[in-house]
Length: 567
Image 1 (cartoon, one colour):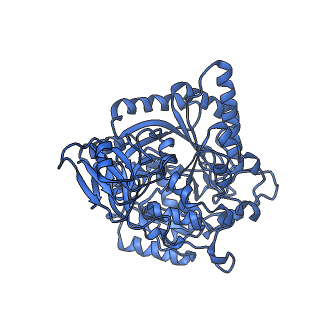
Image 2: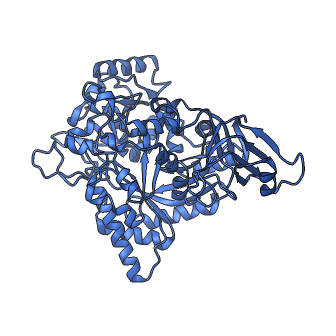
């Protein structure tokens, strides 16, 4: 479909010409962007015959490049559709009453395994929950409650039993991915990270049931429909959930229902398992790379989370009376350097989860050391290094991403009160107030990209890019505001960390395209690029700060075709 959209407010994200009033699309590609009369754009766009193109008067509506969410979890969201939503409460008795009632009204024959989300991370403090308490609500089948931070889980005794987890079961990653234990070494029902997933097959075999999580096109279709309806035309997958996910997405693409450009990311755990993961990635590349899909990145979880008390910090955790606990880190600088050098030789990129300031420093040190080693060996530095989250950064390290070419990825809807004050159990208030500060990094010239990092259907609505932009621009979470009696206006300190609208739009478009290595084909409204465009309900730059989330997508154009709404 050839079309001209004229009389529009087009924010191009092209610094050389940021605004235009007309864009022409021919054979799915942008053939003209600019201002001026009809004849000018017809000639420039190569339109020679009447009727060759449909002309739409946009009546002043705003058009932006298609949104790029550069860290989201299509597999995990799709697989969570069977989870049970808990009422939001800080009252453990209210929560237990809900769990007990649900179990009583849904017998084992109907629900052999109960998976609830979420309970507030702050509900149990630093001691965490205990299996005996959950047993009072459910004891006849396995039961799991996931915390709001998504990195801790509370399970009952029956689940530990059916997973085959005992006092003698070793922790996969002590201090990080682990079973918390009582004074006798017995697992007490509090799980860190997704350690239970390593024992899931045993659990399902013992109960003779598996959850409806097998990846199929039908299971995943709802996620991609949400992407389409919210103007998201390209994504980076924060964690690829196996080959069945790729096969399902390839089938959706064949059916014309994928409607995003997809960049897959495969997880590894250590230098020792990295060669096998590279081989797995190469297999996926050969089978699934096409016009809309590619897999070129490996992911590492370097530390935990601030709210879980296992982030890697430069100062001791506050709750440690000995003053010797600095959190957990998956790799030291030397091992990470070796991983980087291997991936660079393979022409692959890396996406590293990191939260604490010590993790950030180790990451920077490893990149610097790897680049120096590559130069010494005469190996060109080809890889892209993405640091995800980076919630706490020591001021001395702020300039390093720009100097080292590191990309920083931030989940904008976390910028307000989403995780509350839970981290203050482990880090001092001064450090807590310096979290989520990215303006100095942006000002230094580093590439900073934005995303949602949603992992369940429970929070999928927060992947709406305008919701995320509002939170990052105001530092106020409209769903989970901080106490206004303590924080005026519920604004999360520091106000100086608010991100400007220009920065946000760039991070969700052209910067995201650079992270995905697709800047030559998307991310801005420029001649020669794919026509991925969003027509929005009002001017993003003029909307009231607290109303940005109310902006809607009137039409979404993907590969030059209107796939949602109408012009």
